[in-house]
Image (cartoon, rainbow, N blue to C red; front, side, top):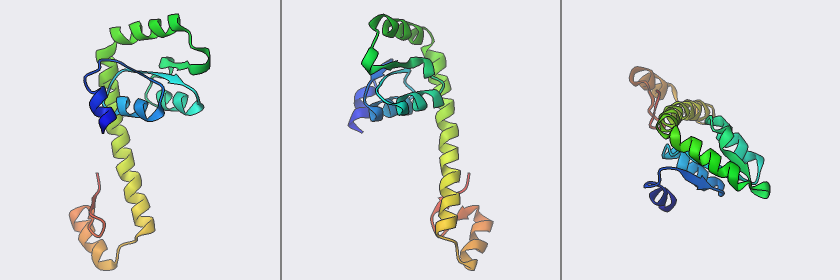
Amino acid sequence: RDVMRAIQPAGIVIAIRFHNIIAALMLDKPTIAIGYSAKHEALMGSVGLSDCVHPARELDVDALVETFTQLEMGATTVERQLAEQREVKRELNLRQFSQLSLKLFPPSSADAAAASQKGTHSHLGVELP
């Protein structure tokens, strides 16, 4: 939470630490990742920012400045895209949690009847989207 509070006022985030990149993306911040592993590339690619990953071992400052400039010019569009993707991923996570919960903790017949009427897994307190 401290990281997110620190990142909140930023317009664009440049980060190396993986969890700082996640925090920036959760806040819909245009983000540049200085990556040291494949997980950086995978994460940034999953939100459409694969062009915003720079390898830490071969950091090219001119390329970093160019990426920053391009990101700055399209910041509003990137913020909107990140917000849309965050919502899609949130819904997917809720569905996956519901499916996993049903497999791990199947409801009793009474719970199943109540859940079908309410649209929830009442024994887990999970509402289906």
